Length: 250
Image 1 (spheres, rainbow, N blue to C red):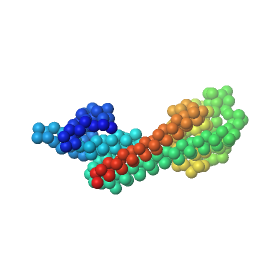
Image 2: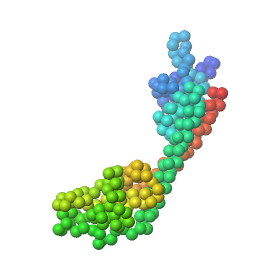
Image 3: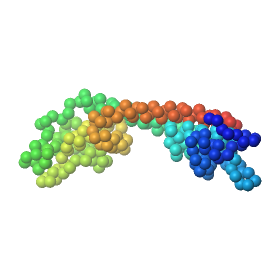
Image 4: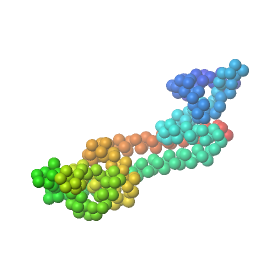
């Protein structure tokens, strides 16, 4: 990045801004937020920056894609306040979140493979609409629990956690699990077998529902891989820029 240096290596706000496609107000905001060290002032009160400020801005903008704006800002504030260990802790926590996201993706992929290999509950488990009061049909709690090899109480626990949402038979009041409920229950079952806690499963079920089912989710896994890889590479790039800033700060 080429900067327009004034005498003594001084930079105006516009010099920092132009090098990164920012506004001068954004540069001032970053300074006020502690992302940049405090600027010096001319006798007339104008801000002047140095190449060190440019390095700080470059480090922040490199950190943000991998760690997110808020975390990147917190990292830079910690560094500028001399709390480098706190900055490293924030970086470690961000890497831990990326690792957890990778493990979650792997768990989803494993659960989808298991679901594809496992036989679905047979048609004898379905409830006909006629005479059952269940409308378009479905499965009662005991039938689904038996098909999954779990207790009915476990399904009710999953319902309280928001992982399955069966409707109620208008005549009997019994829970009736439709096709989407059976899908969610099977996915929860596979993830629980993999050791996942209910609170960690809830976001995955939400993704399945948002995607419109398992097949659309499978199609999105490649994009999920790509996003995680991009975050990992961005973290590496941010680390290099931050190391340069730390070295220049001395």
